[in-house]
Length: 602
Image (cartoon, rainbow, N blue to C red; front, side):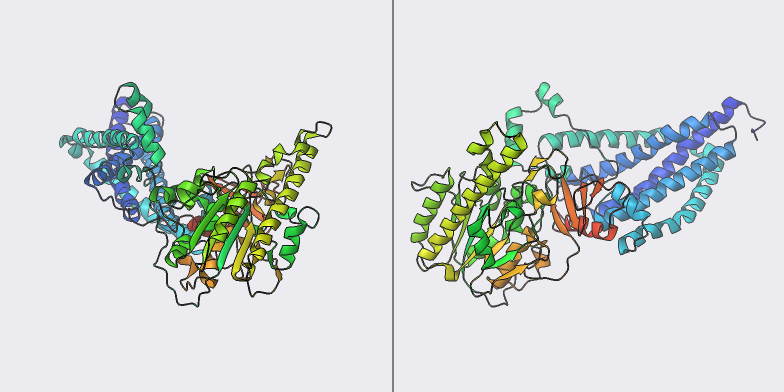
């Protein structure tokens, strides 16, 4: 029924005034709920960081609530004929908004994520888990929020004139406006100058998109481009600190100081390890420990990061900025191992010089310069090997023949279809790499070192020839088994030959060496996302990915999730499963693993 006794203009004016005050008290309520984000997030150590936190807290929630009021409720003021109906709609809208905000705070506290497709799926999932139960239980408070909003609505209606007469509305609006503008201006400066105590707060609050203006600042002489690029190259900003390892390592197991030789035949598919293409490595695998269901931790060069650090690639940028060495290499240094690092391309990827082997000598050619072919690299390794006396050593050899398979003569044979000649060229390069590996192992035998040297032969990632029918060639385009599965062959002195068919990962190698060779007794959970390679118990998932997204391989399914929480599900042949939901408890475990090593305080 339409209100009587008041003109349309008077009624609208009264509702607009009421709406402003109702929005104000909901801003206050949102700010109080928003303190849960502040409690969960690292506390800024600098005064500037604390100032930004305060103004962004006031400004962001003030803007968020008032913007929703202007977009939704304000237009309804002119449409709904009854003030009671309008207030009821406003109460329902505010109840839903505050409930969603409360759920978002719980998601942020539980899995460090704001509401996204994964969290919504979790909310309405029938799968039972502690996280989903916690989120779903928050709906119980919805009736209470509704009653509070109803009472607030009535109180504001009755006190509206008295509140207006206090003349505090404009000063309060000015506080929120100035806080909002100040927070964005401060962030613009912090982003341009890589001021981490502020930029690390960019994702603390929901729907937070701080302004950046580097191009504008450069145009008006407020930012030196060369200085900015220098800071960017140093990558000292926009990072989250990593606690790696989480606890100090303990050594209560019996160690065995064997030499270690790791050979990475880059770009080598798992199925290339067969009697026809790699007869030498195939025989070596038959005589030693062969892991036939092994996955790299990435579909690109960052597979090497997982191999050494035992961590997913998503941690790489933070590890690089901090300069943290792999725990494995730190322990080897502490136990007086010497290091020989060799690559057929001179370690051209910065991942080696700036992250994994940072601070170690990568000069690996005969004259002290870097090698640029596998032949040069192995010659340099042979010379280095003869200089190792009684000191235990660790050596890494990167074989790049398969990486460069397109340079094989067969690749230029235009009489064959392109796809066929690329496959043939790949096979030729694999056969060449097999001879290289055989030569390295023969050199070990000639120096009578095989009996006291652990030899690991693997690859950084696989390679696809469009087996998924998605026009995918090579690597770094999807997370199918063709790009992720690689050989993992280990010669461990004293162990009997065995073939292992359980799922294993690059993340497992460092744990295995630390436990079984170097005597580390700490729980692998404290320094790795992997476990011992020889642990044959069933694992729920294999983790792979890069800095942009992650892939969780669970039996016959692969779930790919980007940094915004959007996910896609694929079957074992990497065909999209559009009608199937992911196994959410497993999904949550994987997402938690990506956050576990980030520091609770910066």
